[in-house]
Amino acid sequence: MSTVTMGASGVRVGSLDPMTPECLTVARRRRETGDVVTLDLLSPRPAAHRPGQFNMLYHFGVGEVPVSVSGDLAVTERVVHTIRAVGAVSRALSELKRGDTVGIRGPFGTSWPVDEARGADVLIVAGGIGLAPLRPVIYHLLRNRSAYGRIALAYGSRSPEDLLYRRELDRWRRTPDFQVRVTVDRAQSDWPGDVGVVTALLPKLRLDPAETVAMVCGPEIMIRFTTLALEQGGVARERIFLSMERSMKCAIGLCGHCQLGPHFVCRDGAVFRLDAVRELLELREI
Amino acid sequence: MKRIEALLREHPFIEGLEGEVIALIAGCARNAVFQAEEYLFKQGESADRFFLIRQGTVALEIFRPGRGAFTFLTLKNGEFLGSTWLLPPYQWAYDARAVEVTRAIAFDARCMREKCEADHHVGYEMMKRFLPPLIDRLNTARLQSADVYGDDGR
Image 1 (cartoon, each protein chain N blue to C red):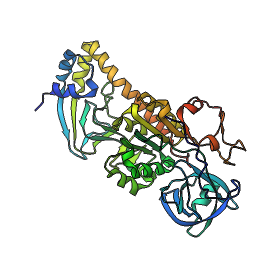
Image 2: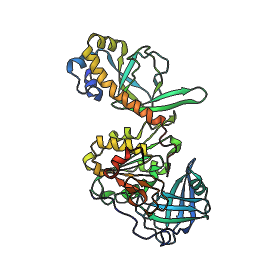
Image 3: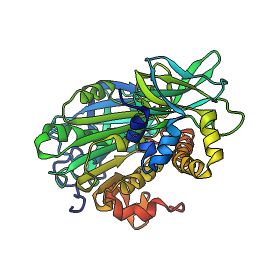
Image 4: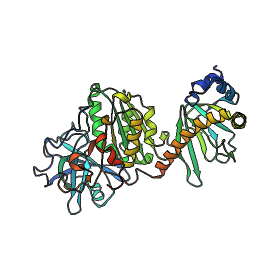
């Protein structure tokens, strides 16, 4: 398996100066859950993102945050971001309406290894809002279905009400040759699905561990126990990829806000191969 | 119809158990089928059985007065259900509801306790099979209570 692709190349959505945001217009806003919205932004030129990359979104007068692309990257006239309102900036962004403008810099960062995974089984493990950065991978796999072996999604969430993209989840469940398993941490008794942690889904998926490339995104604690379970299940460390989250500010590896040991997450990540960060996941000091 | 011993041998819980022990504990077991929405047991009732799920889904629930029940775990094919039969006061601490038609092997708890007491090898084999999933469920409960999806988002 080759290393993670650096993905900052390609046609920029924002200004040619990576520190200067360009204004994009909100074309559509969809509410996903109580605190999550998806914004479709009109791109002034065909956008060229790779799955897993992020843009810096600027709500003028409030601030800037990194947000992964979450749409179908084959659709180049729009840039899609799914945003959870967790702080002042993301809350302001999530309240934007159709016709509002947002500043954007990007794309930045590394990408999920969709090319390197060709011919292999692909397992996507997402937790909570972590499904958003992985949704472009799902679109890519389904569009190029014959290029991959077995594909599977294991998705964990806090409750049924917190599940993202519910209509798409239903559609993916009905898609032949795509194993989709969803679990929640707790539910009312009318929830017909699984309740438990996301790793409990892994043994139920039909995949060849030796031939599987796994892509994991979610809260860091979930990444830690998921990667452990994957390794115990026989997936090699070199075939496990994860997305790390740190406080990214400049997004070009200068300011150091997102330092993770020897890495700057904005430049060397956010997608890492597990062997590059395995030891760092256990360190409490960083 | 398969004999209970044959059904037992197909269940992952029994994997690696000697034939004589399987034959011995089969005397405490019987086949059981639960319809969707049927309760296998309810909180506070006597824990006089435990189950090996052969096929189906069981939701474990805690009832909250005025707010209804919430599910904290679902169990499926190949898993066991019920551990409070092992220790006094032998009382269920939650409800177990079949989400769909569920087939299981039900064990008489008193019968099993007596056999484990009479032959500690049988008891030790049972302990080796109950403990790992119990620890796994304890870890699961820890993670669920940590609310890992609660305030981590991008």
